Picture (cartoon, rainbow, N blue to C red):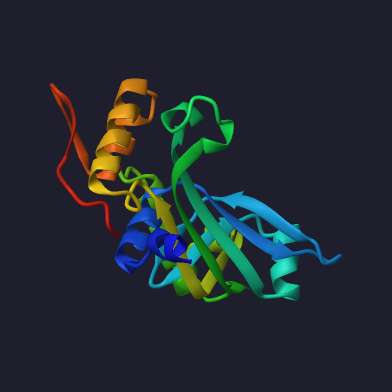
Length: 210
């Protein structure tokens, strides 16, 4: 329980920051046979809700109309940690650094044109920040050609594992191992862990506590 508590993201601002940077989330609804259906979606978090756009017909929409209880999840795998970082003979020591957010809440299909407009413009701003498009207005016919799903969270929980559960010297040793392994994600992982890259290797500049 103590470790699980240290892996919890306690800052809502950090959770929102993570959600707004990630490109793909997964919505889980319950189908007519009682099975969970998980679908990857583009999304935006705005005004304390998740918004997604969809075709006007589809199984997930029917699921939500029938049962509004849904789940939503976003995760980012930062760095695989080979078992030999800890013990060259024990493969079970392999691990992963990650960030994840899980939401449980109520899903609805929006009818209000103003809220649909807000959601679609927020999605465009997130995914096309360079602009070069005409903003949507409530009078546009496009609103009738797209469905917008809104998920209002009952619970919003985040977990992260970026070395915050380790002593300072252990974190520094892990950072050096990641640096030397030099995977394609190493530099970004070290930055998130609170390190900068110097001529002598990674140097801790920030405590990774969220």
